[in-house]
Image (cartoon, rainbow, N blue to C red; front, side, top):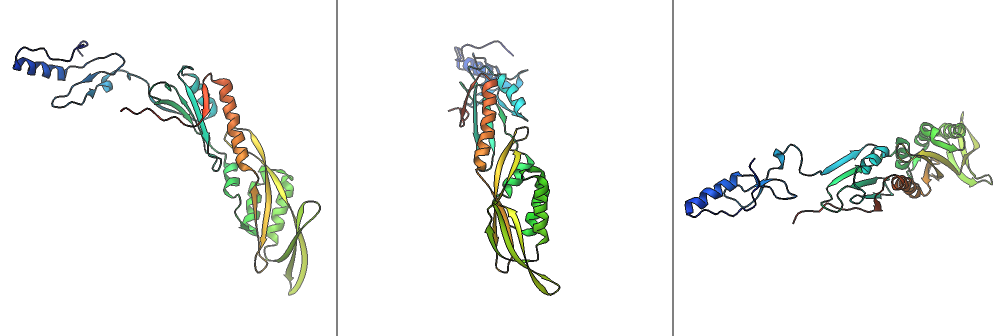
Length: 279
């Protein structure tokens, strides 16, 4: 490449000289302070950027993707604190969170590191079935499969409850009352060898799960309140409602925010900052 051209105006004395000089300018890379090299293509006014011909980019840009919080902390710490802003946000409904370190926040804002925490498989299961009515067999199978996540009552008690519910899948439930010990007691009628026999079944009013919201994060205790409905024909449907699940998600995200604030010397705030687009 040739040396820097400080003046792009042709100086030829004749028309032929001007044409020749313009042709030379079109083929010559030009360098200006704080810009990538460019050329003036023939028969056009659009500048042609020649950055792709350089050994290294003129400036850093693009987005780095962090796989966990520790990696994001290391990535975020590589930027100059005076030029870096970290932004975050979370959708409390889905639990989707986002962290972005913007290295060139004072210029184009297009050089970033991003971290999107992954929800644990356990949290996704409990959240996906939250508030969804299930028949007895489906509900008991779900409780059995996820009993290790239950903190209170003990897992063995939850397994016993699940098996009891499954065993009563052919009975006709008539009514339910709330006992003083906080359990729901169901009255039912069961046909045994052609004879109708009455019985009762009790299940807890609520239980507590202890699960991590995000992979690598701490576990949180969440109360699940049991709900039920006796359908026509005595069929029983059950479900659970996670109480204030959004607060648990918010707490898990804010704990990560606190870790970032204590580790990375940069401004951190909730929201988003778009890239600067050329005019």
